[in-house]
Structures are given as structure tokens and as C-alpha cells.
Length: 396
Image (cartoon, rainbow, N blue to C red; front, side):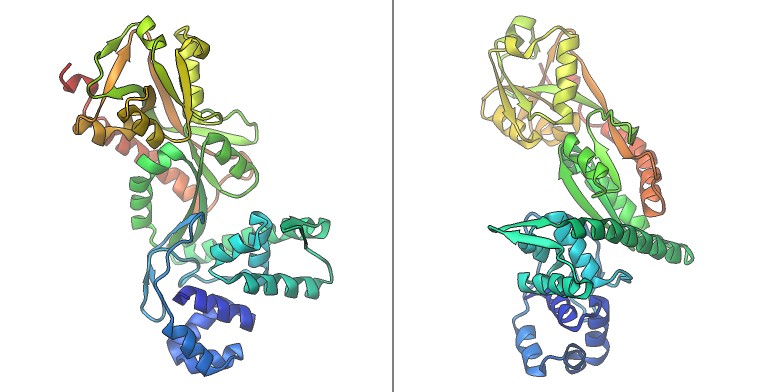
């Protein structure tokens, strides 16, 4: 059991916010924490003796924030550390279960055990006198009363988050949580430098990242799971505002020992084309460019669909075919002469990465700050990217 899970377990037993429990442990020691949580000091000691470092459970959205717990344990991946939490803990557990529809996954996300999550939901149901979830045949579904409570719980969470931000603004510091939805290419090759610079300027901000293809990110936004999205393809939803923030070019890549640097139309059609999966923004851009150049997918020798840029690069290296990837994704491979760029006359695939948000309400507080930061900083990153090796810099 890790230090943050221990605090969460104690908080669940005591019905108190985890921050209070952590503060009691830090200021007064474990014996006082035992009194607060109504459990024995011996049990606390046995739990503490089994502490091991913990990281983010597999499948959990990555939470980025560096801080030190009251006991001095360094943690790069944790929720709510040294961050004031105004939201009722049971409501937070309820919102998490409603979003995941899984007590096990919710427990992992909250650093609780599954019985502790069940206990919190049962206590909330008892307090309200209604059933919030149906648990049948190993599946969890939200009831009509649960869906009604969820709408209000989300409003309460948003209001409290805004309150935390306003309080922090009084100190001229941004503070609070921001959920970002990021499509895979941006998440892997662009975002690390972007959020690294943002967190350096705003160290009290806690970012959680949800990755997927462009369609996934759009759905996250529409469902209120994230406040800002960074996508690779176009979005035509009326509920969303789209702002281009960075130029990108999709290039055709082949193994370094591929026989040609330029392909004729016939040579291209005779190759196996490696494509991203349906729903990918990259795929839509490539399909539009091929159509504009009067290429039809069904005319290719064969088309193989893969679910990531890394998969396409690995398949190309293995000699399974050729494929289009972002220039951002192959800087290392070009320098190491593992892959090379192949040109096709009349075929040019360009696009913009886009920042998307709901048209109403517009991002406020941390969301607005990140939006403004991304739109400006992305231009600087694009300039740095322009210094990377170009296709012409390699021998033909």
C-alpha cells in the first residue's frame, strides 16, 4: 500500500478529506491519525511498514504534478497532493464511478481499494435514500436518480474548481486541475515540451491527460470529460470551436534501403499502404490528399490499418509497406538513417494541429491560460521543428 493510498483509505474510514488526514499525519504523527480515523495505532503501523512507492495504475489518465507529501515522500504521479479540495469526498467518488462505470477502475484512479469505493457509494445512497447504481451480472449502470445527481455533482465540481482558481488568482498564481484531451501524435511528439514549459510557469496546476484519436477527443469534450482538446484532424461539430495552433506535414516514409526516393503513380499503387485506423485525424487528412491527387484506396495493391504512428513506423522498418506519418514523429529515425522520406509527384499532405474547446461556455481560468499559452508557444516549437533535417539534406 503506498503513502497516498494509505491517506485515502484513512480518509474513507474517517469521512474526512484526504488532505486533512495527510496534514494530521504530517503535523502530529500516526497516533493522532489513528484517533481521527477511529482505527488502532497498531493497524496504522502495520500498514505503514508495508509502504512501497506507487505510480499511476495502468489505464489511468496520467496526472502531471510534482510535489512532496507531508512525510517527505517524493511523488511525480498523484492526485490532490498539497492541493485544497473543497469538493465533498463522497461526491468525488460518485462522479468517478459514474464516469468509469467500474468500481475497480474507480478505485485505481482514486488510489483506494475497491471495498472503500463501495463503502463510499453505499454511504451516499443511504444518506440520500435512493439507489445510484445498479450492479447486475458483473456490470455497473447508473440509475435515473444517479444520472440526476451526476448533473448536479458535475456543476458543483465545476463551481468549486472555479472557486479554487479565483482564490489562487488573488495570490497571482494559477492553481487547480485541468483535464486535457490529446490525440496520439500530438501526445507523443509535441505535447511533452509544451506542457513542460506550461508547468514550469504554473507549478501549482495539475494536468490530467486523456489520449485517443481525434474522434475520441471530440467525444471527451462533448461529454465534459476534458476542458481543452488538441487534435490532428478537422472537427465539424457546431458545439466546438476549432483554432489551428501548429502546422504539420505528413510525409511518406519507407525503409532506408528502399530502392527509390521518388515514386511514380504506378509504383505507389503497387505498394502496400500502411494507414491509421478509422476515426484517426491523420487518416482523414491522408484520404483527402489522396483523393485530391486522384488516388483511390481500393486501387492500391493492399491497405493495412494500424492503430498508431509508432505501429506504422515499426511496420515500415520491418519492410511491410510504406506509410504516411507526421514529420514530428520521425526526427530521430531520419538522423539515424533508419527511415527515409519518399516523394510522389503531385501529392502533398499538409495539415494544422488544432486546439478545440466548447463554444459555450468558453474556457476560463486555467483552461483559458493554457489555451493562450499553447497558441503562442506552439509557434516557437514550429520554428524549432523547422530546423530539423529536411528530406533534401539526406543523400539520394
